[in-house]
Image (cartoon, rainbow over all chains, first blue to last red; front, side, top):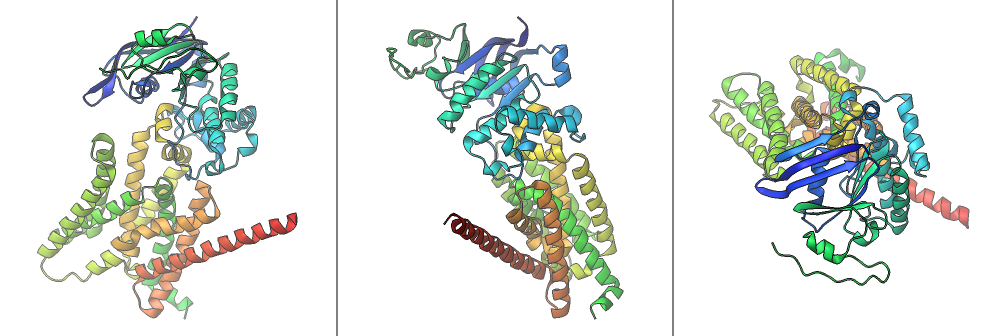
Length: 252
Length: 280
């Protein structure tokens, strides 16, 4: 299988605090990785390093661009946490999705017809074509997340990263989202950050436990004991009658 | 009597100033209001007073001093709030008062009474100099060009800076460029509305426009029209009643705002009533 991204001995953090220590991770084509871990454990920091918002203190990130990523130009699509943008900002749904095609090469370029058609096509694919001309302030939380998902995938990335996509949205959106992700997974790798371990383990293929370090678990079935061994003090919310225990707060 | 006014050079200059500030404030103001950085603009405006004071003291054009001061403080706010851990609003307050303090000290040290000082504080569109008009035309042209060629990039960066960064857009460059344009617009509009009131030229037309449209481009166009109507009407009122132009313009803009808001709420309630009637 083709590698998309490799993280090698990544150390990253803010000011004088190291958040991620010696992280190694390789993302392959068609991977579906669930990133779990306690709050403050470094999940978001990991994402920031991968998408280039945070420069690591040391270590290497290798991006495996191939010929076909060269065409669409984008290796990574990113769906940020909701509530990070201003709902009253005067921008239309169409323009938000269009911004997913922006890159360093087209700062001055005008949008062409093909791009406009692609926007409508991708909105239709998500069942929200009727929202194209609406202002983002008129949308519900779930609709807004769908729009942001369109923005993240419009450039056909090789890897889609979602940061807690299931917070502040309705259940309908959540179940739709997981179905959509499974379809998208046929043509792109997916990394999903979530605090809802119980739910995502049903959909992901592998799990990465992030708590200051990263432990890669090459299966979507993980036990409370394994989580403890990975230094990952989170609880699995039981869906069904799996016996589970709640771990004591782990002290460093 | 109305048309005779246009035979006076000062009146033609004032009208041109009204058009040019309506355009430049209409565009940059929409950016400011959308991005919620009105307070930054307030800081920049007042910081420019330092440059005016220094200009008076050393005997060069106070507007040049104000341009230097406002651009430096704009870049300073952008830099310090992003690169240091000082809070953005505290940085604004510090530079706001630093500029005012420097201005007050230098104007105090300048011998004699400066009659022109009041026009810097409160504006006087009837005394806009030809030099100021040239600068204003140049700036308006630059703003139109920049917004024309990179409108989408500006919009994306203003809406979601983090996403724009991951997309590879030159976010830092665009932010510095925009804040510089804002600073220059403010300084060159000081002649019209004055330091204390210029902020309203950048916010009231946009707020009125925003009542009727939620589209960034349409807000720009509508703000330009509203800004022009306000400034031009203010110009007449101030001339015929011999009252300060800056304050008159702002007062008229606020009247326009109240009218627009009332119109909109009557319209909405009528539509609601019709809907209820249609159902019944």
